[in-house]
Length: 603
Image (cartoon, rainbow, N blue to C red):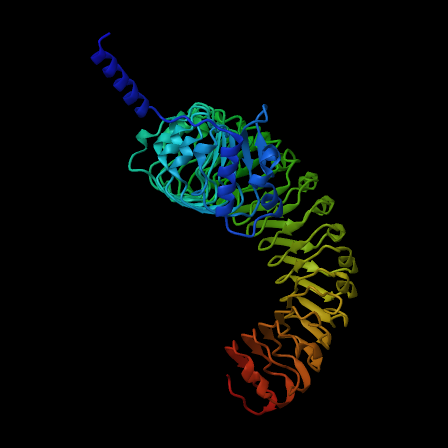
């Protein structure tokens, strides 16, 4: 070889070397220096364990530093796990190139912000990257598409925006991909986005996607979980979804502005365990083929425009534990053959529909049920006695129907129940002393029925009661004197439009929490409850049309939250206190047809 050729070859070699990427060899010192430099860029205070262990004076123990894991050789950093460490800062100060052997980076649940640096693409061995639940913003760097070993990638719950780089769709090993709860928008064209053969979990929920349903999803044939809810996709669910994504076990399409009919091809998704199509504009009957999805444990079709009766094939959903069909126009009866097969139900919500007929006694077979919502339908007949067998019940709401007869005595044995709402029916009979058994009861509402008799002394045993509503019935007698004093959690009391008499309990607001008190249109007499004077939590009070007597001058104090009060048509006397002028939110004060004098000025 001539001298010229040797020089030429040497120059070519040097040029080629310059064009090749610089390979950084990791050493404990370079890794430690990069980590400490990043630590010093974070906002104090830092966790004490991080402050003490992340130090160059502790270099010999690098593999024992807090949140640091080394590889099997114990010579190089392979994992950084700072999830939930409550750190504040950015990634700008982290030299990714000095951590070439990093396989896992978990920063979930911190306060990291700013942009995600494009240099993150240098972590060529990374298999796990979780930046979820932080404050990252701006667009995603396309260099993320260089992380060919990635299997798990999450940006959940940040402030990221723009379009998702299509380069990420080329990551061959990713099985978990979460873009949920950001501000991502749709690209001009989804055609650059390819299917991901290894992908099993994909979340695009709670973003700003619009219009076209992403076609690349139909090419992700191994998906078992798909969540694209809380976007504005519009249009219909593509029929190809059912044929191409047959492995789906979890499908969430709630609040997507979807229209059209429920497809009978739903039956092709026979592996489904959870299906949420709620809050859309679906306008058809429920296809009988849905009954072929026998693995369903969760099904929500609530808040759509569905009509017609429930198909009998839904009896095949023997594993169903949560069923939401509310806020549609579903009609017909609630068949006994369906109820008797749904024995795993924990929650049954069919409110705000057009169901008719009697509630089948088989409802007593739902021994696991905690939430039973039948309200605002056209159910009639008696409340099934068998509901009293549902010992796990926490909330029962059968209001706004046509139930008649007495409240079954067994209901007073539901000691776990927290909410019992029976208003606007045609119920009759009395409230027995057994109501005192309901030690967990927080809300009791039987207003607008035909109930009568006296309120039992045992209502004072309901120590966690927050709302007590019995207005518009035919109750008589007096209120137990200890009511309120023995119910320290009370916030709302509704007693109006009955035939109640005697004095209101003096300590009705001894807890200082009472906000709403309505006792108008009764025959109450005597002085106003003394506890009202210091009841600063009051917002609305109706005591009109009774026989209250006594001097009002000192009956009330300063009520900064009071908006409305009516004491008209009683037998009160005295002078209005200047303190009324300090009720800064008061918009209506009605005290007519009493014997009052005085004046005050609103401040």
